[in-house]
Image 1 (tube, rainbow, N blue to C red):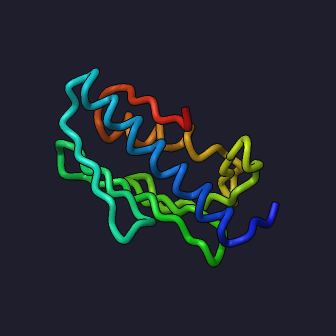
Image 2 (cartoon, helix red, strand yellow):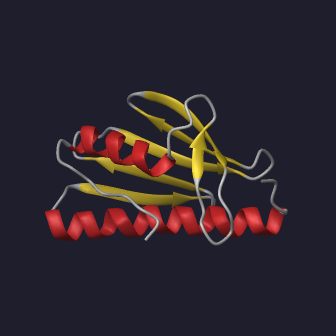
Length: 117
């Protein structure tokens, strides 16, 4: 589904805010040593206790989100609707949030739940 630039930016912002909120909850509930920082409005850096980082970056011109983690770099295309946002890996079809859960849990050493809700 191709979105208008305005709609893409709204969905991308909703996604980044959900990531930040999920990590803030994990920080408080699990007493995790992690830090999130927003850069330039469309990038979230997640730094873990071991100083490793996951970067989530939205790319409006391509209508994608990119993730860089210890496991590598991944591109996700918006495949949902405005009411039901979904991001799918451009190579594997894997869901962005499922992958982020796996990447963050591995880098934190404990289970972390990141979701849109």
